Image (cartoon, rainbow over all chains, first blue to last red; front, side, top):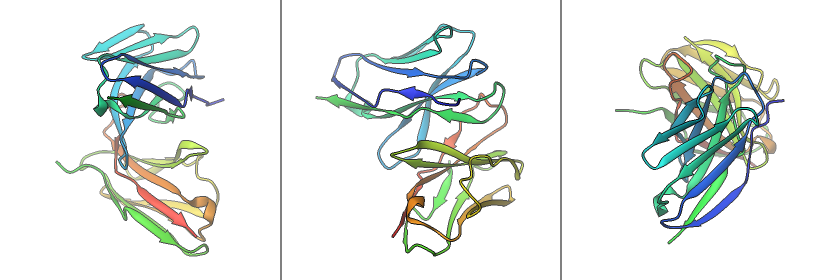
Length: 112
Length: 114
């Protein structure tokens, strides 16, 4: 199947760390992505990780990949109110293709 | 630096009418994608083009939906006849070349079929 699953909602306090989780299905996926969607806008690529990596850090963002369990997570350090948005993980289905399968999205609410 | 431009931003129409959504990709990009976003089904890929040629239309719901890309700077998604269950936000995205590069999304068209 092509299901990519995420928890629907996460609430954190400003300054805390946020961890958004994702489970994907296609073991041949070459890259996995995290996109952010702000209200009334399209999706914006935040970061990506190659499937032969375990971890990638990019400023406040840390991506962890457990390929055995097909589990991907996005950690946002020092979460700010401007980080409030919907976060989508995505895999490129079937390996080296441009076809992305998106997760269900996680709404992150940051409380001041 | 112009991004992906979609029009209209909002469309409200009665069921049975023809609906045409438009997209202008980023200049120079050779891939164009149409997505549909609903609460129930999330974000679904409908169809994508490479160099104006449809590559994968397996996500197109049914024959009422059609998409064209007559040139590198313009694409349309048409629904005829429209039904209330087609109500959704439709996104267009474009990218250049390799699958590693990000897909750049437009701001979407919010479609309501009454």
